[in-house]
Image (cartoon, rainbow, N blue to C red):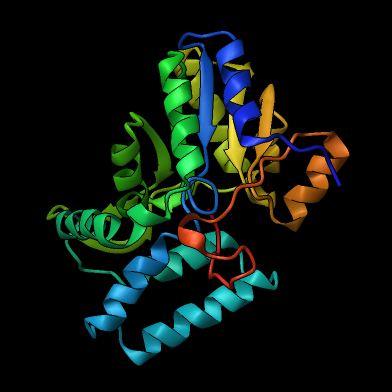
Length: 254
């Protein structure tokens, strides 16, 4: 069992450290800022509205299971999901994403992580939401928290703003998220050695190793093991709304 960082300590260290925009604060989305997987709100909406055919539901479930047991790369899972939305208007999906955030996701934001974001903003740090989620899921959360910079995945669209069924390359996940953050830091002159990264999944170990202040949040087993091995302090938070930590949640990636 690695060392832990209490919620008050996590705020105190930010206040005690250097301020200014050269310090970055990078936040994963699913399982870190928000309890669970934000895309499930969209999937549930499609099922309730009878927009998802039986083949789509079974296809996503099958792909999710294959991903979880290591039989499908995350990139293929994301492209599979995008394929079911081929022909949809990106503008309408953006509006739906905002509605689903207000009605389904806002209450799942971790209160303490909201405070962590605010503390970094108060210190003048460059705050970034860095996630493998798609824009329709990531951007509403960023707007809600006042986060100006978002590094995430984007749908490919045609000349009419409709989805082609593809995702813009390179797909941001794992080591490629670390690459995207490094490129961002070069442009924005952010010093990774003085920066923070908050995440919950083992796929984010690459970026954890690059920052001066790696901060696993409710880490899943792979990241928990890495945190113990690397002596990274772990932030354990109660789930919002009284939900128990052990409740099952569908979370292909973040």
